[in-house]
Image (cartoon, rainbow, N blue to C red; front, side, top):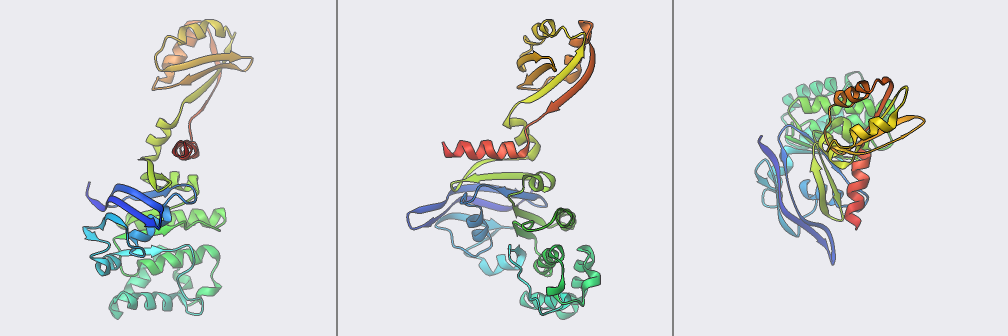
Length: 310
């Protein structure tokens, strides 16, 4: 896959404080990439460098082959940045805001009208085109913020915690918006504190702490690597001691224990569930219920961030 963002040994110092410490990363074109980490991890600093708002102390960052320092003006023309605070003007209408931001990016007048119409339709703001921006709901204001960053057709869209302050319905609508923008071919880099948001949206996730990369990968892979899967099986007549003896020799099974609720199997690797069920049935057990639990992305985050502090 083609890389659209390439970061090489990137560092950023504020006096003696190292906000970023030799960060290297590739982000594939057309993906939704999540940037996670506790407060002070370096996320915002990295975003500011990529958005040409802060000059790195060392290393390099490239967006579509352009150096964010040397080619700053060109980089700014191919990225869109959606900050946490609203970037539009409350006293202007939705259309007037898009026209204004389009003019800043030197989008031709005839193109702004068509582009604005398409963006507002995609973001479900078409009916609000002539409304003053200040009268919009919180969720609509977030979408307008995104619309203003899209008017010049950026190749990369940077979203800094876009869901902050949104109710669950507005947040779901925002997720749909982000997916739609991505389907149009825009690469999206998103910072968030919502693990559910990162899990639902992102193709890949990076967790940072203390200015360094702790872990990076697909959400599913990170969850699988983060911990053990536990299966709780209840059966009748419930001769769990015998079943336990049959299961324990299996290499991928970390441990077995049982109580009045059933047999708890902790997996440290891949074991087909049917293999476990077959052992129960071979001992004349009739399975009554099966419950399983796997590590969540929040578990990954806590584990990764915690490891970085030791």
